Image (cartoon, rainbow, N blue to C red; front, top):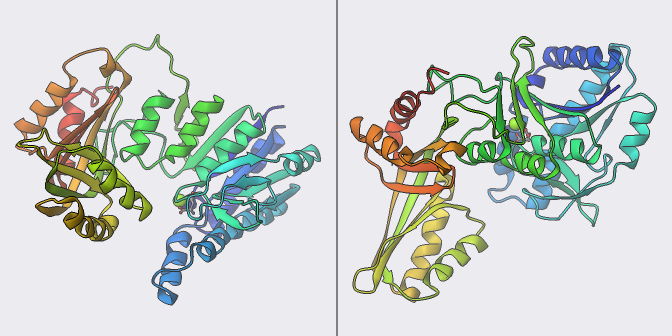
Length: 406
Ligand code: ASP
Ligand code: MG
């Protein structure tokens, strides 16, 4: 008998009908003798709807109240799934994050899991029950409800798999695994059979929306093998995220990711002296604005341009912060562009072989796509391009790096 933690995403539990089908899948697994913990997301667009609702009341709602509000979405789906399992004739119980022993810090809206007290979970599993855990939430030291950030149910599942020493962690979603690119943008994209944590983390942080990046991080730290597969297409094998096997040969680029929309801010001609970057980025961090790519130009006459990208929703806030700073630090002006996107090429192979950047830039040039910014890691190259050309860039790079052929 093995122990499995499964996670079902919002689209998999979007309706009563789908909840019943998920219950049947869980029941099958349980009847085979496996011990099952199932983590659920909120039904369909519930989380977005709750956010809308809150904003109709208060444009800047209290983050504490927000977390309690959003946690209810997952509580609804977990109770319904438990009921559906009762109808299947199984013993099941739903637990909120707090009841499941998930302890977090108190950073509302993106709390981090500090520890998991598995006593209650072990007790329930010990009686043979299927345990349904409301995803994406926990409880702080002060007994306040917290949430882990959008998409956080993946992190709940992987963390539970680690804490419970589960034999398997399975993330069920509406797509058949991790693809070489987003199939909606690139019809040639193919599902990957497996991928290493490091590559998956780069994919997740540069636009692959299938997995929460923090879940991959937790998986890497605790060595949890994570299977990402389709909820309702049982024939599709899915993608296994696991520790890299260096024996693997083949294509050294594993995937192309993209972000549809990002915004860029340039602070022009600031003095090239120690502390300037800190004085710009500290207040941005204090305003809770997360900055993505940062480029500082080589300075000319001791003046330099500093450019960074942010999510479109953060542009206004970033401009507010930077404009206020400008007279203090002495820059010549601020310019911004709201309609950019990114395209990234990811693969561990590029760390040891030259030519990847050249092929990427050549491909973009051949397609007359202008590169606005470039950033790299050991295993990734990202170009910021015009939002309108992101799709063309993804398709062209997918072909150029021979991902079309498998
Ligand atoms: N319901 C939350 C969200 O939509 C968490 C999750 O789905 O994982 O972001
Ligand atoms: Mg979701």
